[in-house]
Image 1 (cartoon, helix red, strand yellow):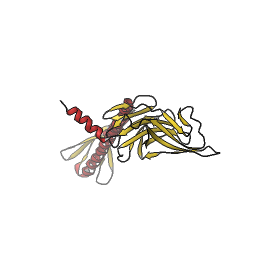
Image 2 (tube, one colour):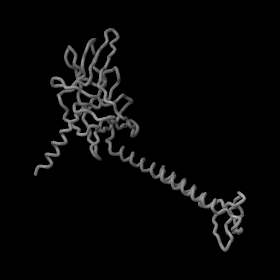
Image 3 (spheres, helix red, strand yellow):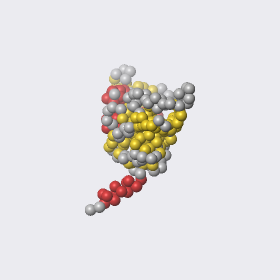
Image 4 (cartoon, one colour):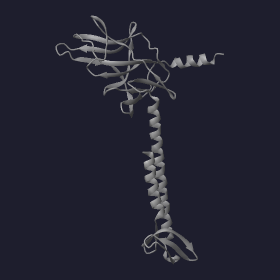
Amino acid sequence: MAIARYLLFFLAFCAFAANVKLYLKDGAYHLVREYKVEAGRVRYYSVERSDWEEIPFELEDLKRTETEVAQRQAAIAEQAKIITEEDKAERDRANEVAKVPQGPGVHLAVGDGIRTLKAAESEVHTNKGRNVLKVLSPVPLISGKATLEIKGEHSQTKVTSDRPEFYISLSAEERFGIIRIRPGKAVRIVEKLTVVPVTKEVIEEQEQVEIFRQQVDDGLYKIWPTKPIEPGEYAVVEYTEGKVNVQVWDFAYDPNAKQAMDSAAAKP
């Protein structure tokens, strides 16, 4: 693609370079390949007649000719700059895609590298007990209140940026985002569930974090918070709304984790 664009640009440049409008003071012009001023006359190669010709210098409007040539050269230079910037952006995007492991999942951007997150095992907690949530066969729910939980009060995945960046690769078109999760007794609550009697409609309550979404490739997105998040427990989630079909990749924002790492690195 880039080579083809450069070729088209080169051909356009050659066409421009081969033809110049040599203006006369009466407003007419000769289409010429090149020209030069010699002893009070302008000598030029006529494109129309394929031969060298001359005309008195005082009949030519060289200022207009040179101004137009300069303007067209500036336009070509600007177009070349745009093509170069577009190609760089395309290369950067290709490099970004290449560094993300293939297949569905979530990956944390760490400097110039990538850290793949492990999906947490989710459980639906009702007054009847807990059931492991399986994406392909969601847990049947009874009317009333329930919670979707993951084990442990704190995530083992720590981030030290208040606007962490993630790549999420989808296997199918689903909703996704970042949510705040709340610690409970030996668990973290991903969302609250309400199952409506009779209709069995499920109302899911999540603490959504406002994020930017940038599509990097087919099914691959880069996401990050629109504003700094507060210290605490979070998760990247992929879900089907109203189906209790949620995949969870948990993490915690802990600004003190960076200080601890810096202190450890400073010790002899």
